Length: 191
Image 1 (cartoon, rainbow, N blue to C red):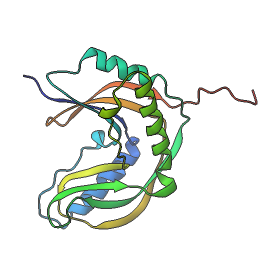
Image 2 (image 1 turned 180 degrees about the horizontal axis):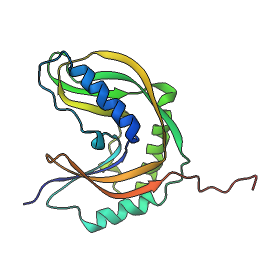
Image 3 (image 1 turned 45 degrees about the vertical axis):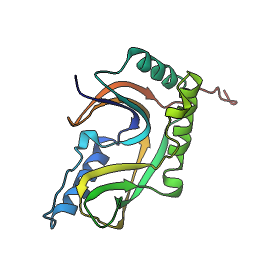
């Protein structure tokens, strides 16, 4: 049996922002000697919709359905802001460290996710397979001592596309399967 394939709709920060995130992780570890499993710069992402796990591969009809849903996307580019570095999970043992945003800084991500979910439902994706909870974050380290909640210099960038990614479980590798640029497909009232 081949590797498990985890399918996601996600965002990648631009390379300059990913490098700042890597530097934040390095700063965390300067005086820390415990376990650490940092996320590589090219794999840093914010998951919008997890679409399940498949083995030995992703069925073609699943991929086509997601591609059809992605084609329905009608969202103009927008700015996003992450301003907090924090631990996730129990604060008494090693866990994940992530970037998070609050309020208006991540509000457009909720709108984008809602549109993606609506598109999936329109193409027949089973609603019970869509996780209802959504917490915008970017995992920085999968195995780190608790860091509490730390405000950081806000990381701001323009979100310009949504990606469909096959994450090969346990191999530290993402395969890009599709991308959809953000653009407002609605006709302007002023053209």
